[in-house]
Image (cartoon, rainbow, N blue to C red):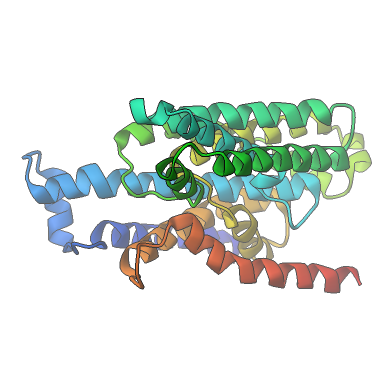
Length: 327
């Protein structure tokens, strides 16, 4: 089963990616997709495929992959099945950075101001969590990340309360709900380098996570540098998830759900979960993005909202499942 898991997931990702290029308000046929990707002439189909749907698809794959990968790494590092990127405050810090850009009007004068500020905010909160947990263990890191995340969320709510006008409040709320609509190649160029570098760093933690499954003391006795692994996980998450949140807004639950879907299929080995969880995360986000385009029950559903609605029942089941196991 493990041998065929990654090829099977890649096949599913290829299928949903093809569907993503086909689906939308204007449905396209496979021949139109091929023509749009291969024809350099500036016609409507070519622009729709290459300038709107393709960058949106690439962002969905990158964002889903880094969220799934970082969730798998953090659950293995912290040995906590409820761990996900937001636990370290990266998502909250990125959200606060984007809100600051919107609140003070920077986003109105420069289209990429919100993503850039979000990236800076994610780095600051990750650095703060690392400094606060210095010298402590896993529990210290969890508490520091939770504290930093709570502070960032409080400031976001304060900005909403003091928004200078209804339009600013609406723009802040829209960004916080997460979306890939109207994303362009500029957003890909901004987010992709950080996501790829962050993912590369996270993949280096695989062997160490297998050792940490035995406990920190046992891992150190095997020659694993726990501090270095913690640094790689935190810095990789800050880079990758910060870059993802910067271009898409807040998207939760992917980092929680994807590793849990994969873990039983790889024998619950933390290191073996990383790559499959990244692919599963990409499949989840691409599929959810397709759903937001074809499900019409009023105004369009934002991507982050849709994933939260689907992910909340899973989270509830997971809490009950963990409680049953520890009872």
